[in-house]
Length: 231
Image (tube, rainbow, N blue to C red; front, side, top):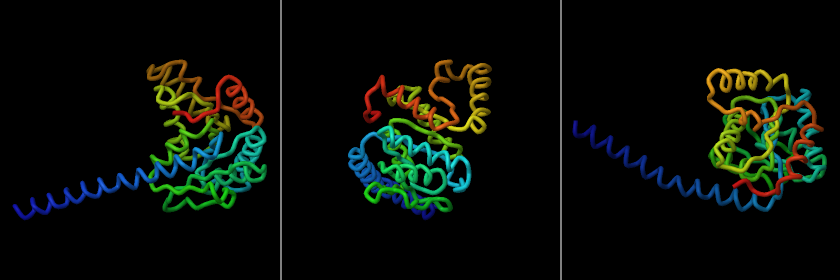
């Protein structure tokens, strides 16, 4: 019994040691991210599925949205991978604008797309560090149809704005056919039936279908507010 207990104590102590040293790696990712992202200037992040085919209408729409975003004076940030992320970087690249990729190593989906600026291709090991970079340095979120990762980014941003942990910025959902049912549920269930959110929380997102609507929302917002990091 004492041998088992001693082995357990050794294992637990080893875990504590490894956790302590991991803090230095986490700090290094934050330092690198802050230093490089602070030099890039105002950008809008585009999110969406890594699985979206190049011939899909939302790939083409994301490319067009990114082009217009650049034409209106912003750079584009994506997760750096294929699908919608590639479309966002492609549009920024085509329009001659800043094209940023915040990459992370994933087992099946993630690889760098070829449209990221060479000096703006950042790699992360930790999802939470990467998410901080998106939230801190984005002047808006444009959210295309996606999966769990896209939903994670979306609802974290909504929560941070709702709880006043970060400044408000535009969160624009593209594709009524994709997002309409989800936010109808948010309204009828979270708001109307259970009162788990307030009515004003519904104003934190806007659902659109065209690139012109995306640009109109961004321009109207920044006619009133300064472009700056969000915290």
